[in-house]
Length: 384
Image (cartoon, rainbow, N blue to C red; front, top):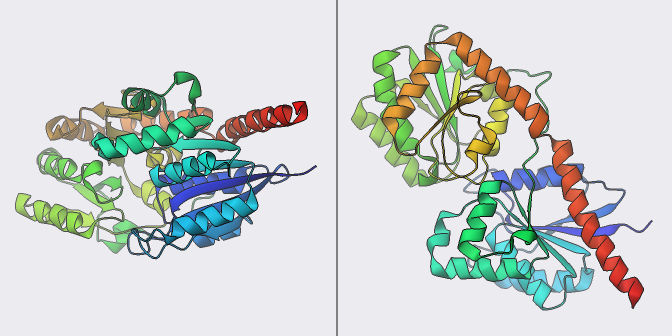
């Protein structure tokens, strides 16, 4: 049987939530049915770890459209040449620039089926120009996959998209913790005693993730739980990271905080945390929550976007209003003082992950979307 040609199209090829999701598609989509290609415009090696080698290991084809920088639009001409030549059955876009590129291909007749995945409630969409670009791009898509109901609601409000065009498919998590090995013991490395408790945060250094609210809450936490330590890791904006470190110094808590850069061993780190915290101002989903749940860690997060679809307040962790460091501190203190509650919430989170957010479910639902449009295309062609 002839395989259907699928192009997974994205802007960058460095570590991020959307990119990890695309990697899961590349690994697990049925390669007996689909001939899969990854296409990307620009690699940002200064911002995060490049992922090209990860995609090569999946055995799919890879096209680098060779953008020399963020503002080098020669990549777009390369892209148009490639898709005109290859004539993919489906172009599946991820993130705004790729959505726009897919829409252009559809308009030019180079894409018979266009599917767009939306991964976030983008803060910059408050900009009228960006909102207009996304509205136009999604109007060209045959179907729009959203990674949460909250993202779908956000799109309906900002782009007036037809609800019938939307399909919610949650991220799926690949279980890889059955034989977990500790590659680095952070208590040994940073001279953390056995009695000290680790609050962990993993997320890109940027305003969105709300680092400052956790650091401000940490001063209050130390008054109640002096044996607490805070471990923060992530890639991103170096200037913002400097601001956060300076804030910790000004608050007098820097000696109790470990600031790390990008880490490849997220599960190893998560397994050593006592509580995982992410005080984001907005989110599209938060794949990092699934990573925490996979090793049975209780979560304290902000009640924004779709987080309440992942973290069940009072059951798998606590949800608090954004920017409220007093309540954030209060919930973290409750968990640090109660090991039985930490264990109970952590196990509830792991059970929820294994029922609701499996890679098998995500792949099955994605393939149903593909097959629906491929069958529809075939029916139209047969009628001609």
